[in-house]
Length: 197
Image 1 (cartoon, rainbow, N blue to C red):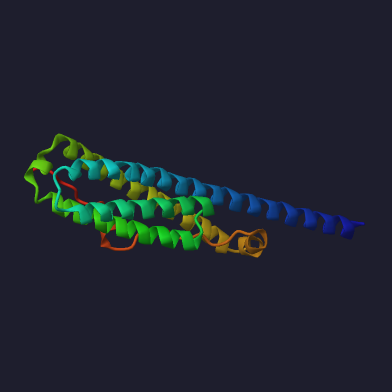
Image 2 (cartoon, rainbow, N blue to C red):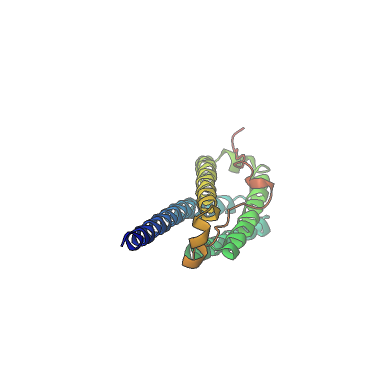
């Protein structure tokens, strides 16, 4: 009788332990997904600013249509990639596509800002100055959101790969999460945007 009781107690202990591990994995995954949604919010904010930036610059940059088109196309590609990341819950393939698209967008924005420097009237425009401040603020928010996401990925992956969670994680569909690293040097820090003299 004692051995049956001991065996039942051991099974209950294992069951409770497995439930605690499972619940912790769920909580960490939810934190990661929440952090991913915060990145999406900030990227959408940036994507909403870009058409205003392009529209403001259009009147001044009559000979720079190629640059404006590149920014518009890069924005569309990055927005589409961000939507795919949201739909996949941060899958590795979609995260890599987003990183590449964001790298292209950063390059296009950098070229646009370099061209704007050549147009003193545009640099002095109050609307352009306001947009530049909003863009710089948004870039900082994107950087903070990306850092928070990568921190949550690290916590999730560390717990998932540690013993005894690793014994259960794969069986319940908890796969390693992918960090979001933007390609190119443009995103090592927030872009420097200045339209003032």
